[in-house]
Image (tube, rainbow, N blue to C red):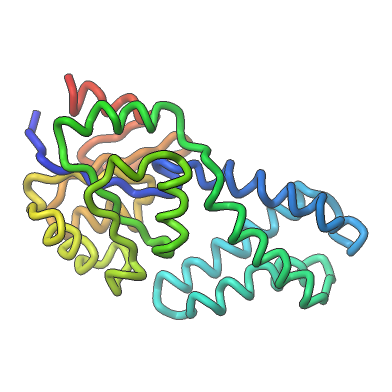
Length: 232
């Protein structure tokens, strides 16, 4: 087993359970803002359409084709338009409340916090995320992980998004390490795994659902599967 000195984690969909946290907030807002009365058929349909719209816009943002502020406006406006709702004030309210509430959610994947606490004495722990800096720091703080990481580098601060090599090289420089002594742990084949491969970094693909990356150095279905690899 190769000995690593530094571990770099993705945040959303890897440690912080983005899907569960987001869906809870979306369903809260559906009820509180009485979206049914505005013509949005039901809460599950609202969540499904939002996730599809947001995924498409997020990909455009990561490729540099859409500014952050525009994406944040369009994701709820386009979701409501799918249901024939053209109320700009309502989409703005949804956008504001979603941004305020979602990062405060504490839901992590099972075993995440205990694993990090057990790894901490043995490794430098860091985050490389394509999320927005202020939002990601709020998530980390509210889920009680802020004391565990030395470096939290967002694409917004780095000026580059995974899988671009620049964000990885900036993370290595900040952590005082190299690709050879580091491991990337993340859920995205296109961002985390491809990015790590591009800089010669070993990588563990966290795939609790769906196909695991056949080219990943390691493939795991649960975070605790890292224990025998890193603590065994």
